[in-house]
Image 1 (cartoon, rainbow, N blue to C red):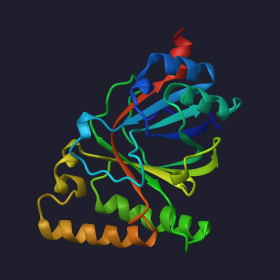
Image 2: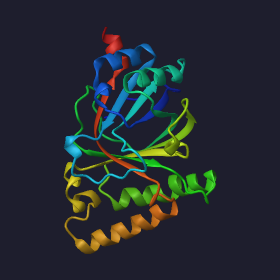
Image 3: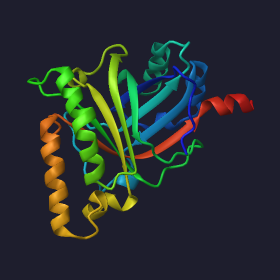
Image 4: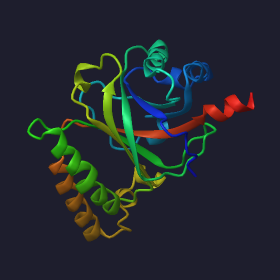
Length: 239
């Protein structure tokens, strides 16, 4: 069950292409808490998802870090903490839309689901308003009903946090989708087609037609990951 954060809580997200090991450090979380972080989520491409599909536009994304921040604090301080542990990263303040709320625990344990994070870049021939309409309104329902999705979280990039990598300059959003663990190696488990090849083909066809309309059939980073969350606000209250 999701624990809701105070109204106005800011969310930041960071795309990491370096060794992600420092992101699991308690020291990082302590420094983030000192910078105003209330919650941290770490998505790591690790051995649990090794067999899953992944796509890269440049150097592979090794992790995606999300940090929810006290609205009275400065997001740039969070970006500085992250960069201090893993080097330069691409980061944004995002507008989060929870279209299908995932089951969540906040003690750092690994979620059993496969968590795919897609880094989205709109095609040059679509203006931002049209692209957002197609993605947020037209595509969302298609994505949820054609796949075995148990969580669907959209994040619209509002502002970059410092310089982003050249390959990330056109990033407009990140979306996280959760699937059954078996989806790592079973396409029917991924699409929820229950072993029916005809239904699988129908679902893939419907999804890919919608994906094409938002330009996500190209210029896409797809990051399969293990998902972990920490509630730093509760830890601070306990102290």
